[in-house]
Figure 1 (cartoon, helix red, strand yellow):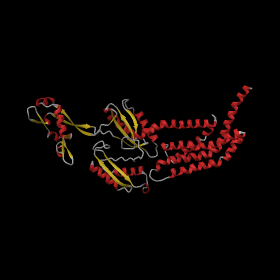
Figure 2 (cartoon, helix red, strand yellow):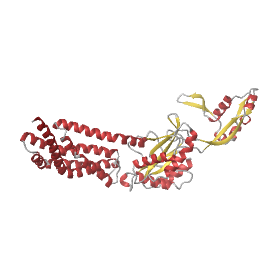
Figure 3 (cartoon, one colour):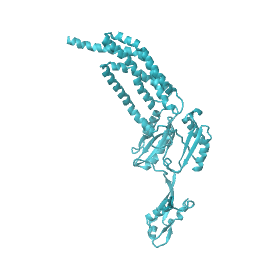
Figure 4 (tube, one colour):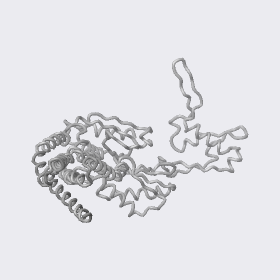
Length: 454
């Protein structure tokens, strides 16, 4: 493993976009077994690179594919991460079941089905069933004849291979743990069992091979669990040109079509699970914001109708934001949703300026609704344009910015700019029409009530 990982590091270090490499081999908090290593790649500054981190990762993976006997999976490191576990790709989906046999049978089928979907790439599972294992079958008749119990056999094996700590040596400056075990050169292969002797009841010794029968079989290198049950984590990346929502839908379709037993339960983890949770909460969040704005405006203007007039400016802003994201081929991610929520506050001030002036002209000066909203459109045109362009130019650096981390802010800026442009064009024309429509609708409702009183 060390030799092959050194070959991978040598293949990657020659890339001009790689600044430094750090290689780890051995079991730790990230590497679950000895046949799994980890490589941390530090790239040169973005200003000196021709492509982003994902593009460099794809190129490095292609370069490492020429190293035989080892497979490399690269994933960009996120500045803000919700993943609680590491994987071979950016997103994870976990299968768990009480039966380890079912998990070993269906996980490869599930992975193979996902690899055939065009929305996914770099699909891999952490289920490692290809390890070699030595099974020792105790000859209990022979063991009883020598007075050897299963616990004595277990203790002898642990003394030889288990790194049992038997003492601690103390010095003036430090302390050293004394670990029991056979020499490393004697611990390889089945011949190591022939070098282990057990004490018999008669005071002599007998080789371990006289009371056990060794057989070589397959076993799991790592036993992963989620909660109390065996689990396998399937990692995947989103294919180029596809959104995370497309990948999530593809995983759901494969799960439904594969027909796995009901005892196997699947669930997204990490960033994919946060994405699923956000899909459930985002509509409620936007609805709560609209209801709050409606209540505040209703109390401010003492009206149930004119808050709707002000909120009528929001659909054009939302449409403009979505069109801008589609134009620049960006996802409707969390930052884009934050931009839409910001548009609620930025765009509705145009309607507030016009409706507030028109209502004051009607109530204080006795003007007709047509004259009031017409005068409001003329007098409020300049402050509306000033505030809109101020917000527009404030969002342009977010949309056009470069440098480290600028990709995170691009959807926010594009959403605000697109929403402001379309809403600004439509608001000045639609708000007076909607204002007069609701005013005439309210007048029609008042007439039957007045006629009934008369």
